[in-house]
Length: 232
Image 1 (cartoon, rainbow, N blue to C red):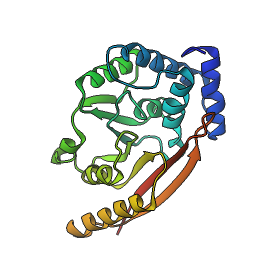
Image 2: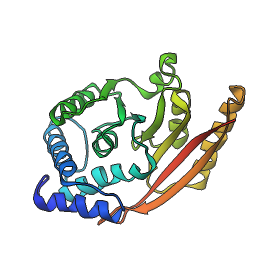
Image 3: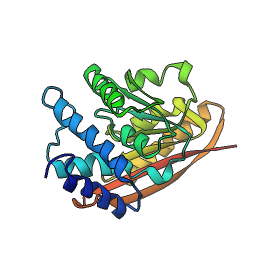
Image 4: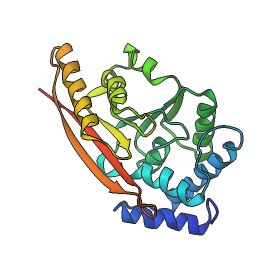
């Protein structure tokens, strides 16, 4: 099976159905273009360690669209540590009205992301060369993003810590993980409470949603942790 082939596209189509997500063939074609560019660039740039076409389809694209049911149209989304464009670009393809910002600390990865955006003709999406920890300290973008998402950051507590200053008052954080422990979740919630107290309790609390699922075909366990702010 080759990336972008009919068989590869059917993997996406049927896998999305398993995730109870509707997808049309035009969007799958765009995934194929993104995947082909990823494969081309990975020969010279460390964008992904995954080269098997099935794993590219499942681990990159199907996994990236799993949060679609939780994200409303016409919202602003920050993909923190986007790397090869995951999950930000597939989410933009799935929900075209999103305003998307992709950030990464690697100039080469940002060059790749800008190339993919240009080839796909996507609008209202930008790729910025900036470290997440630096952006979180930039007061010009405080309380800017409705949704902040990441697949790249291994530490959930670090991700939450960097996200809080950037999150819109009624926004939410989506952490995409493999297996997740109760301790990780409790540490993140404790950090949020402490941060809210320091800020004068401007945010009353966060509601948490935990969705566990298995990736189609590969059956790897995945978790989506959603932390949504609740105003006073």
